[in-house]
Figure (cartoon, one colour):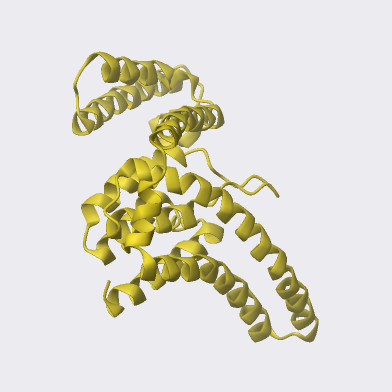
Length: 265
């Protein structure tokens, strides 16, 4: 790894760590983090494949209240570095990512505990009317979240690909790697179930089962599934529009112009 790559890797890792608390740009999600790491390390294809695989595992990972989800940022960045630089398999990346996510969960709780100091400091600046001081507290707390991923990424980036690291990864028993891959499949199912329950989109369930049957009994690739999904969405929205226009004609006052997100579920 060149010095430029290491610097860019630290920047990507820092942005991913900060994204894990911002949530807005979703830079901490595996698909984005692994893709950016792959772009920096010159193997974007592997980054996308690993990111897509880990994204399925992390689909149901989310922070709810004070409950911290497993850390997708640390797991994505470190596993992508080990897979790309160490020339490991995607299965090995999954085997490493799951315990890293648990370790990152503990680390982010530790960092959030430290940032309580900055919250109290911001209260002090607020009492003094110092907006600059409040902004400094925000940025310092955010910087700590970036450092907690950037530092491990830099350390792993400097040793990844060495004989010692490759030997350690190769020494992981196949029963563990295969077991984690199988358990990862279960996590995907749980993640989808959580998303479907939150959407409460019972009218869309027939399309879900249609996609499941097509996946099981046909050899359609992801592009084909995307086309089928677009066609189903088109007819669903057209059917909904007809129902709303019929209701408007009956005097309910609703029409196609008043469709919002809740009407599509």
